[in-house]
Amino acid sequence: MCMGRSVSDMEILFEQHGNTGIYNFNGTIADRCENDLKDLLIEAIHRMDRAVLNFKNVTKIDEKCRNLLKTAYCTSLRLRNPIILTNVPKVYLPDLFNCNLQTDADLSGGIKLLSRKKSNYVKSDERR
Image (cartoon, rainbow, N blue to C red; front, side):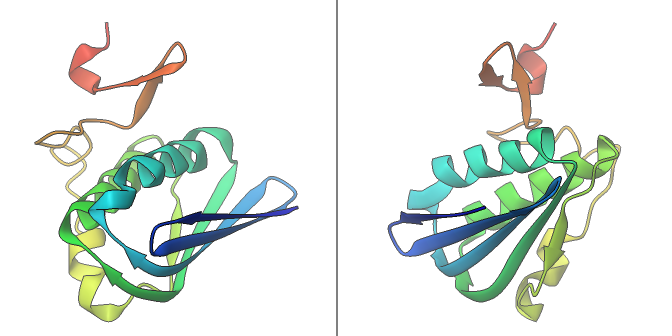
């Protein structure tokens, strides 16, 4: 199954092979795509047995989206369902894979933990 999504300068081609979802990113991942990226990451973490994010054709990832990707990656590690980030441009590697599971899993800043409460996405400090 393949489906394409295009959001501004970011395009995502989704492929599903059994219980594995592969998200192929193209173009620039910028803050104007943040909400769509967040929804996609929540889907990858919570609805896939295995999720692969392929950045082979990505030209740029802005700081806000790098932080969101790091949040998702650290959250997936904490939940013991790690997303796989592949073909990440070398310049972004230190930003994305530097997780301290005791602090980064709950993050600091606007987006806490990527999780769901009923059908709404909420910050972890809002969960009961």
